[in-house]
Image (cartoon, rainbow, N blue to C red; front, side, top):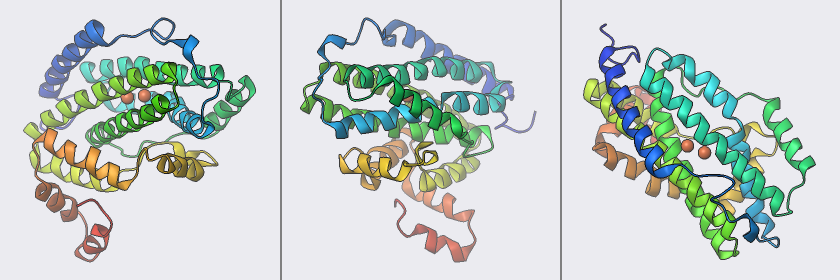
Length: 282
Ligand SMILES: [Fe+2]
Ligand SMILES: [Fe+2]
């Protein structure tokens, strides 16, 4: 097989299976948590700041697109067992996130069963579509998205602590730890791709880093308002992206900024390259 980036390539199959077994063994030993037993549900703050609950609800909505995240990505990687098994395990872990966030919203008294059913109806009214059509690009997107998601939860946790809600604080730290582990796995796989095809992987990395947007929230009718609330609470904005996502990822991958700048713009016509660089992370 000539295409080194085809998920069915023997080197990628062997590499992914090894990385997945390491990921899985570590997750089983250190990272499994129980929705019922590990969150101090009796300590939910029933007088929580509604602005915090709004953001919890938005994050819950993003997690609720799980059927699309699983169903649409799996066909790209089904011929690679380690990668497909990772995706199945990832789906299990992600499924707990929306359960935990939804349970908290109900127990806080800030959302009713009817409101949660409405949220689900809104989510399932529209499908999330893959932002990229090939496995390597989706891998790079997922690596960035998991780091960004980790930062979102970590920063929301600060508000949970400030408002004195030990249940929300604990569940956000459990979720953040999962997201961080997902990011770390994907980053290791991206390194594998860099070893196999550095120029092609750098080209995609540059393009995706420079056009990244969080998934799904824009699919909701009030997506813009939800995104504004995330910014208003100081949880995530463009500067956060540069400082906590863009630069740390380059460092983790051992990639210089100049390498992705060159690669990103080499795929654009000369006239659009300069325009595209305006307002983008540098
Ligand atoms: Fe998640
Ligand atoms: Fe995740």
